[in-house]
Image 1: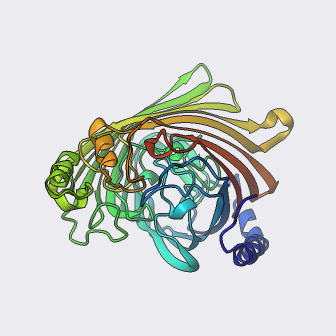
Image 2 (image 1 turned 90 degrees about the horizontal axis):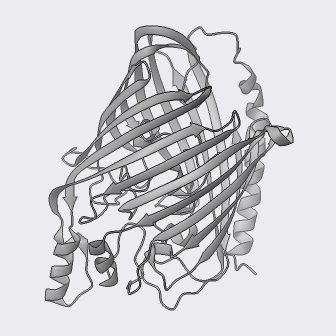
Image 3 (image 1 turned 30 degrees about the vertical axis):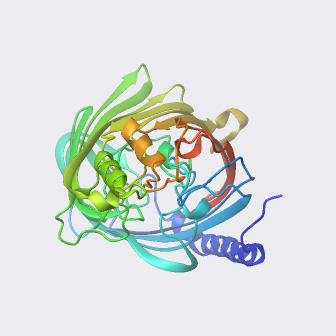
Length: 453
């Protein structure tokens, strides 16, 4: 039987939040109907909202030892809740300004540590038992039409309805997430509506600039020409690796570039993109940390050997329709394994393969089912550092005598209850959590309730 943390209090809070989601849906439902599918005139303003409640739990698992950043081996469950309002306005032709105030509450399993491919994209690195307010996004987007065929743009979260030309330039500046623009995938990119695992929705080796909530200040440019898109951006880093505070001086920063090619196999659409990043900041090398540990007799610690240097990586992202309702996606990436990851998670190599199926075949077109398998790994230097007692962003078992690749299977079913309200059942099987053959495997069960208008 799962031993829930503060069970009575959490259950009462969960019920209140579930009620709040339903009340929010009832209050905002009329707003969802204002958009006219036949109108392509630029939308002047928009108000949207979403609320998501996620619960995850796992039974007890084998663990002969554990360290400061280990997944707790006891049976436990944790929940997160977030409510976001999306306010958008068009100040002039081609421009959009968006602000997304948000209220967050809750924790990921074991305070969001213990697995490099963490099982909930709804769990941030900073949790709290009480609701708190954040401002994840405040940005300006300017689209410059360059000609070509016009296509309709449907209203959506952070997108005003209207039309756009095939060839265009899109400029974005302000506070937003790097993965709002880069490394996107139609089948696996939204932990509120599809897969939950961090490394399924974003490439694990893409160590993108972000604070502890996955957002940062920066600017990006996108150039669309026919089937090609070239993207580039510069973004602010945290004050220190995995810090909740950004570097206000912009002295530490990241450059990101991406080349995308869209194509069709018959009538089946596909897309492939190549993404690269260079992080310039104060970070530690595993070799330096190991050398200092040998001198002092203390556990290895990259924080003690940080200096200004550069870390880079490359990744590929593929999406391909197999039928009108079935899609295949692949993500793979590798980053410099001699230095610590700065922002995202402790992964030097990753590969993900998955499928996403709409429910048309069983007469539920608004349902979705997904299946993904992934493998993460770290370099030999990184393994040695972990075995010497080192910790990273999410992992640190105190030792790592028997390293192995972290392998995860995730499957989910997203059920539409009514329009705008979905309930998802999710299951993940984690083999070698934190690259440790001595611990696990772990089965993680999840439920997600999501309302969006």
